[in-house]
Length: 346
Image (cartoon, rainbow, N blue to C red):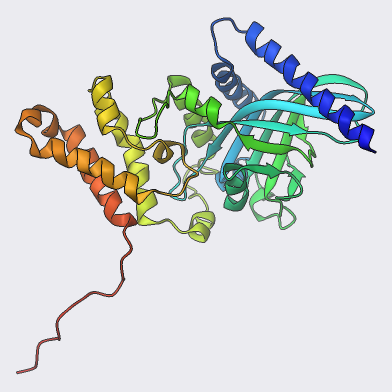
């Protein structure tokens, strides 16, 4: 069956070329990343507006991540192939959603129908393990993580349905129809170069600038993943299973507050006081050494009277205090208090 592997490779290469041509010619003046973000928001909004055919909100409420991949090109002639580019949004244990990172989806199998068609795909991640698998390199649906066609429209019984045990639920819209779909064998990978380019990240100390479209997409995902009904609390079980660490909680606050400080600064100061990119994008282990370097730069500004106009600003003080707190939270420490002997009676 060696020839099948060769044909599959050629078809995937052809589909990649077709998709690249589409992304360049269909939206003049926009990068494919910008186009992908806007199309992803449109796809999500259109999907969730249809009460009888939308992703159940209860499924999103406990999600650890959502991938949206518009315009996945699928072709087949004896051997099938699939290629698409989209976004992955990740939810922290503290409940906050990260701005999207860019991903690719590729896959193929024998026996697909002949012809070429385009589908929109949405994946709902129900476990932190599957999210980490994508961020660590690549994740194969059905092999590295159990994937299943997702249910639609059932707002009520979804949360307690004992049969829903998959790590990832998959959906597809093709020819106007939206339904759960099985796409086992497809491979998800983070496109780090595309992500760095979109956020303007050229070096590790640079603070990413989140475009308005990415903010709006993130807010939409967060809104759809809110409580099932007014007055009903979201299920805290997933966060409890992972454990919300102090360092993650502080990092989440930094991600929210840092842009307010950097809005006040020119490019040289943004570079000097910039936070590591992994703090904003997520998925990487914290680097205490990098944080110590950042704290040292903030210390230098705070001590220098020439920069009082900056160091006295509440935006600077908030980020300065949080980054020092974050440094302390990453340091190993014992839970036992070091105390002298208790006082004697009398």
